[in-house]
Length: 333
Image (tube, rainbow, N blue to C red):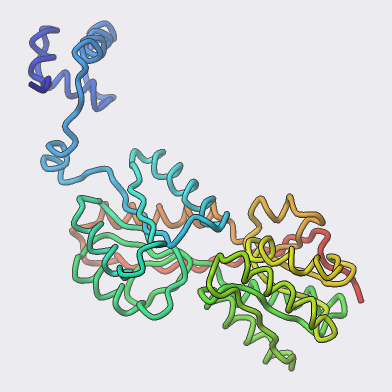
């Protein structure tokens, strides 16, 4: 039979509310330090385990945040997930992580519905939505769950993302300043925001867009072939814009043709993860600071949770301007 707070209180000779105050670390409680230590000692001796389901029903909160992420293969989303977990923990929340990769039969809204019904106080979703943006919005609005989208802007829901157009403009400005006019883009089919920003910058500067995509995503064989294609068409471009993760998997194909960065191909990489700093040469980057994104995202979500019964001021859209980090992967023509 499970040990209860009533059992602990009886053993120590205090009230049940005193035990609750100690276990909840209530600073305003009048339990003496000696009694507090005794309560914790008895809890350990009896192997007491809190009933989080009962606490959730009583307080109408679980201290759980749901996180939906497409994949953790990309170092950027790994860093973002760790940052969200750390910030959530600092606010007393645990993270329930759901990965969409590997389940082709489930849609974005399927995952949302599951988390909304799984006693999460709020939901964070990461990634660039393509076809299902409206369906996601409808699912969240119907569930009335506190929600924030990271990396994609939303119309009817709270979102936090970087301004990819500003980031791409900074990349183009730096490459143009160094004399580059033949600028290619490489990435995944899910890089919709960066793709649109690249095409707009090409249009603004009268540059013919040249795009390479790794399809299917994360397939190293296709990534190698993508790198080979970039190397084979080096007469057409002198610079490449991509993410640091994309570069890491296409670079073997590029280097197999003898091309060097930046001597033969200048590169500016989005994200600025640890890969950007460890790559040789260190990558000039458009920084999409994962810690900053996580901090804004968790803050927006927690404010929604606190104002759950208040219908006003619930939607907040944050657009963060990225920074250009100059390193060693761009050369002057």
